[in-house]
Image (cartoon, rainbow, N blue to C red; front, side, top):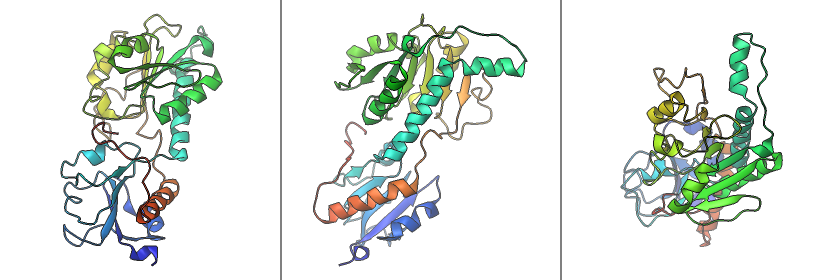
Length: 317
């Protein structure tokens, strides 16, 4: 039996062009963008990004749901999801490399006072500033899973000190690991630059508030702590970030994600002198890299073998 006769794939995406995904998926599977009725028995897999609520709820032969993005909060937001159907998250070297590159770029820019020198260039000011070496700077990675560990290795190679924080206990060569609520204070107090890679879950919504930012290392060699959020916009309270910046509790911030996206033109983050804004561009989902492993996993499932990179619905990632 050919793979195209083993059931159809439902491609259900909003906020991105389905035509970027359709040709690659269609090479090995029959793909549709709408089911033939809410209980279409021909649909065996779904590939989704912010899927329409309820579209998956009654599909009787659905074997697995594949998330296009690295996070799965957009999938879990639909409370009609069939409880028995596994959700597969994206784990891909291309996404990891892009995220590592983004974090290293932003860390080095803050470390080498890029924001300050860009402002001086605009005003034609010739003034040097003290420059600590990388081994004097401590980077805290909040959300220390596989992606956080990959980022840590890149930063360690440059010479930075690295601390990691996760919900459960972890260990990683060269990294001082902290975990749970009991380890959060020590982690924050050690961080000159806080890199946030957390998933968005009920426990992490709004975690980047004024109170947390005030617990970051305040007497480090950069003159104040720095925030880099490349995780999820829902993690941060933007009014609190602005307050922390204005009160000098936070020195600078690089933000790739926001509470509302696109970031509204009226947001003061656009024009704040100590904020660097990127448009959720740290690690874009590239179909050329993401579709082949999805198709391979579908083949695996059809053979009755176990799926990889499954989401723990209770944990939210």
